[in-house]
Image 1 (cartoon, rainbow, N blue to C red):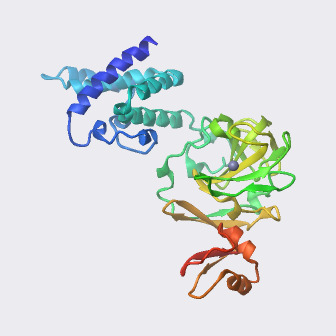
Image 2: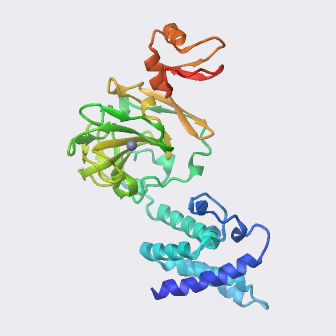
Image 3: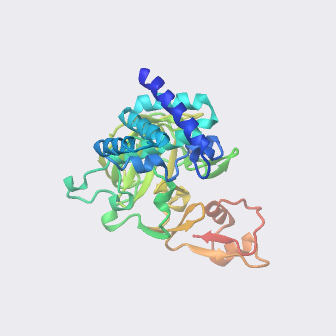
Length: 367
Ligand SMILES: [Zn+2]
């Protein structure tokens, strides 16, 4: 506790120092709670964490040797060196105390969070050379995080435009439905004013939950509203998430095959009844599982999908899916007849209601 009090004094000194300055000081940024959301801002911490302890101390000494030592910068370096020595639980206490102190501290909280995040990613880097088989999608991620279900910063997907993923067949292996039966109780999309990033499937407590593809278990643990949750990274980079579980059958690092029981289903976390919350993500970006799995037939929509970058993330298009651009005068029934499908099928694939009015130019996915 003493360390935290000392650190708090450091914080105070730093805040007084930086808020006196002008320009782009992070302390002058609008203090909002979203400051804790991790984005790759260039900060002093970012630069300092590149230096080893010895280099930092040498840097500090060289500053103190100057005719007029830069006291603000030295206070910040001092503070950073202290933060670097803290373990996870002390860091959590420090962040809590900063939160309680008010919104003036959010820029500093942001810096500390960014630092913690980079440190986690560094520490859990996987040594791929120890495994002769290619590690699932390591080239796409470059890191292996067993501490968080969703550790990825948004910039991870910044360079990607179109990605083609082979889901099954050949080396990719098979596909297996996650449960023995399929009762879809909630879709992906807006729900009660929030965005539901997966689908819900009904189950009885202790029903087996299976990995849908071959892969390696990345995260196993209890996490907030998810309750007990497992994330499996598959060889093509896709990650699937299984939440509200009752019991785990696997550990982080286990290799699993499609159809292998990884957990018993349940109702842990924020759940009103026993069900499986199932998500598909690519580099942290959520994808509508219905664009990958046909929940009626419990089969893949296609063996390959294309992920196309959109302003909000990625849209998945299975091979063989036609994109129909709505023309003037067209209505749903007419388009269904044109492709020999049903209105209900089109609505389900596109997340629209049967009585929706179509816009000219609207893109509809037709299976
Ligand atoms: Zn859900």
